Image (cartoon, rainbow, N blue to C red):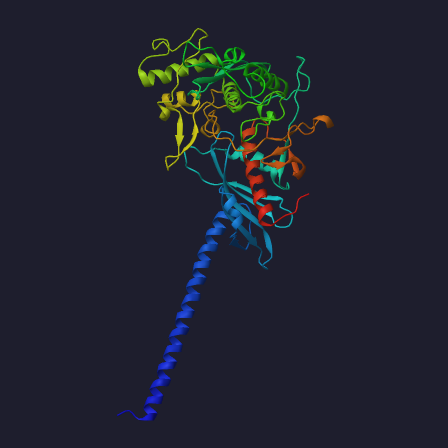
Length: 453
């Protein structure tokens, strides 16, 4: 039988053993946690030191991130003394053509100046590619600038009475054409035809033909009262927006809003998104030297691929020479899907032809005969899923023309802290990186509850 002394000793030993076990568990937890934290910090350093070399990083958890699905993560960098260095934001934004650009943006903690920019690896076939040399030029424009950023757009003139019109960079002379590959609910297919002379847009026509060959084109139908829109008749609105483009040259300066309307073109109340999309496609076709004749060959090639006959054999050509056919029943030929089978954009005729031929997409910024893979894959002419913002451009000239539109990336121009010129002949790339920087600003504005006046 156990004596009182033996029982007391046994209880004491059990308590000591329990305390020792707890100490070992707690010690093991801290050691394990420290190792996990070291591994996490090593991962952060591997990813973020390229834009901001901090001693440590901490991930930000904020409800404000719910409003910004394009931001995958926000991190604060700290120096060796524990003082904050700045922010690193990991995000993916859409280019003008709906392609994904994934990158890191580092911002100073005190004044939100841009400290670093870097592209993330992205093997997605819909990725927007910026080659290393172009990215260095963009970084030279942006590093050290305080966000948000807008554009000062350089004016260019020539000796042909073009005055002080903006010149869209990279345009090649010729006649260019683009039409939608599917009809609208009224069975109309929109098209735009554009003429370029001396690098300027000198003629532009926006109309739509019906897939029912017995119907008039949309402009004539509107004049006859058979096609009605709010406000002026559609033919007049089409003329007004075409005239506005000839005056300003750059379709971004039409300030199309997220609902497809514009407030700056007098008498235009209709949805101008089809016009804007097709004008952008014509511009990309021009940059690539893909004129109207080549475009029609491309349409024939698509039809041959699908039906083993061209437009003439299929009797799809109307009296005006348009290919009156909707590819609505074969969306796979022009639609881009992500891994979840969700539509992310549409290919242009130039892109589809290149794909069918097994070629890279023609380079819209340099000579079309050059085959540098990075440059060729940099841009496409598919006009897809534009972001719901309006471009604000500053002419950098007279005070009357200082502000072309009053917002950029849904930010008022009065709020802009820095103005830059786009990298020459690299507007699309510069614009997309600027969009990423401005997205960071919008998040921080909400996260930090900035009071902007």
